Image (cartoon, rainbow, N blue to C red; front, top):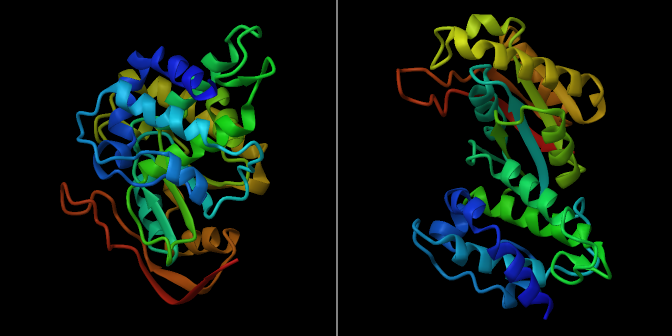
Length: 293
């Protein structure tokens, strides 16, 4: 009954989940398993789907995943550590992502179509369900929050694509779609033990003419920049501030030290727009033998 109720609720969100299909790459194209628990893996039928998988198909997988989430789970004790690059547009998030991804043992990817923001909406909708509705996302009239967050973490992990799990210890992605304090509060709730690199420009107005930025959207960029820097100022223990104007080997090595990565150092900064449309991957260079604490 529990699984049926979960499926019925998630199916009711099918319109929103349509865009979910593109983001959940493992389900949409690779059919990767999304959780480590053997008992849960056996129950989740992650068949290979095409990129045109329907919202109903994806919802069914999500429902099964939530159904098999253990009653006791800890969003801080998964197999991998989480690390995110958050920033405003044209602030250097791609370069920062490539610098971090160059660290042995790290797998940090590009944006995933605002997946976490979509999960935030789903989470809010689940909380808004009437208390009388037991089962589904609620147990005894109270939202089953830990299990829901653990399942959502698994979906985000799946969206990162395939990687060598024997060599990777830290995973994450970059995101420029966190625009409000509520967005940051939720991502921290979903990944309470994650670390964040906050990347902004000191003067967002200088982004005019860079990429697709125009004077019309600079106001929004400025507001987002202020929000992110305000959030970072209140969360020093879990976040590191990078300004685009300060990008240098020295500053990225300071970031490396803050991340507790020792035994190695950057010798060259990547340039995400190097060579026109080339993403410049490989431009980040390091020496030494990295050890992550």
